[in-house]
Length: 115
Image 1 (cartoon, rainbow, N blue to C red):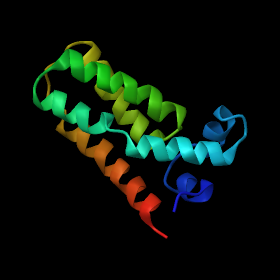
Image 2 (spheres, rainbow, N blue to C red; image 1 turned 45 degrees about the horizontal axis):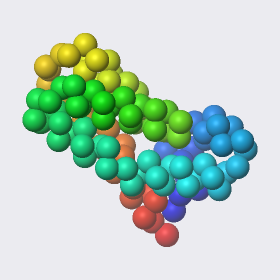
Image 3 (cartoon, helix red, strand yellow; image 1 turned 90 degrees about the vertical axis):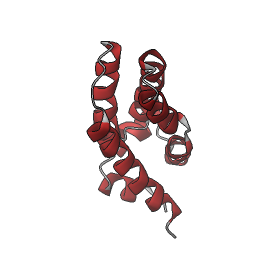
């Protein structure tokens, strides 16, 4: 279940996230839920696998804003690294960063699905 406390324990900066939502915790939790349902994560992985670096950059940049606004710091940090490498057009192995992103994402999705 997504709660402020559960998200905080999972590494989210909930104070900053709620502040971005004008103090509305319910709205913040809705935003986090939208992040967790976003197809952008899969599109990022797909575009990297296809070596379509410009499209991958667009996906990473969109995720950076989405995850950053939700203050999901454990996802935000690797997304930022990927974004900057892609911004520079670097054809490198992104596997470790993608593993970190999806590991944190899946942990939060499991948290959201729990009763």
